[in-house]
Length: 149
Image 1 (spheres, rainbow, N blue to C red):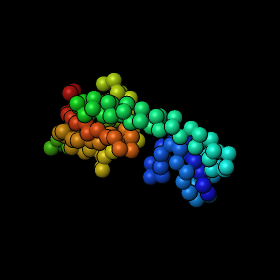
Image 2: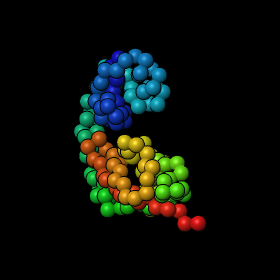
Image 3: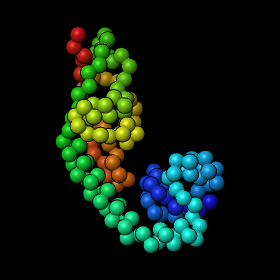
């Protein structure tokens, strides 16, 4: 099924692109979330007409993301956790915890845009990547410290 992207979809494309996806993926995921519209003649003509506006929108979003990435790369957040014997964490630090710490610091970042290979399970300084746009990302430092009792 040919569809036109209304939003950036990871591993699929950017706003305004015409892509081919399976019928089930389009019907069950993309269309209900209003991420795409069907690529009929009318919709393709409308997209072609609005191509310049879409390019301006992409460039504006990318420049905002680059500014935010520059600010985020200077930020470090501290997360305190209870530790047991030999300074081993009870549980782990997840992307939701990092998103909450960044929110307290004044940055709104969705937890799904924070990339970690595995959850953090040790005290210390860890580097985490925040992906703001497909080509724009920032590395932030996460300090995991002992919780004071």
